[in-house]
Image (tube, rainbow, N blue to C red; front, side, top):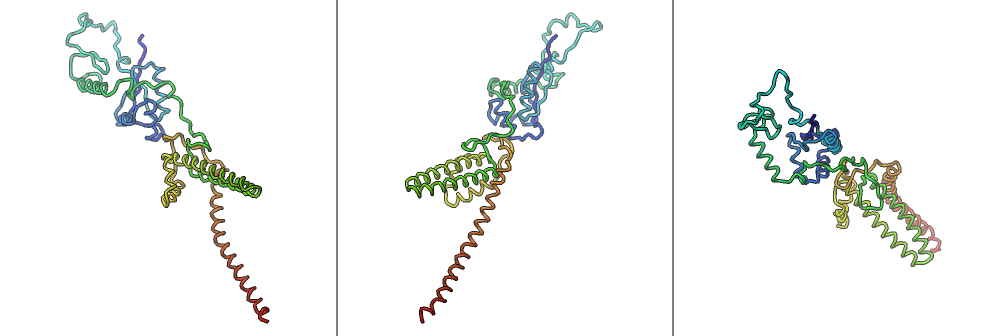
Length: 324
């Protein structure tokens, strides 16, 4: 008995909650193909991504493609799923056993029929079908086409969230974590600054070394978390150099705080994990620092003016004593 054979068919539909761009990127990575060829799979027409598979092989490719976000289906091959069984009431004539010079076999479904321009079983126009197959074969070999068999490792699911790396330029962080990590860096800088002040009181050389180390460390960590914030938006980390441009740098820093990151995986990896309570508290502490700064900007000049007026009043009261 002949083993049933299957094909994997794709019509451009996506799995639930799958983003179109993400699915296209996943398919391009799985099939090791360029984005232009993957775009052709989303025309709405049914495309056989793989043919002539055993059931276990078909299930493996079906799971891999569904995990990539493509809604594919497994269908039996027409040439193996359809057949006629001879019965006692119907036996082929002896002349029919020999191949007829006027007969033909459909190149798509394998149906045997008299020579014609159209298959009576699957309905294809034979000349157009052969021309299309020849064009596909000329454009790319089967090994390099996006319809080739995926490797075994492509079935591994992508992680839901990316790994956090504070001291790295790889990975992604969102707006809240960017603010929280920046505040943590500011607190650490204040602590090192106090150590630098104590060191300067002991020896000016020690104070200078600690200040230089503080400046270098703040710059390096600031660049690392800034690059990860840009990666979360989907931008290159080299855009961080715009912060060095006068006026433009201030506007770009505000953009980094306001533009949300991509919700799904992008070319820099999966999205960052949810924010912890500590990160949220550190991010909100920026608001407290901002309000304290405003209050200080108002209170300090007022207090200084009060001291000046008190000093002037004291001088006026002491002036008659000197005149006497």
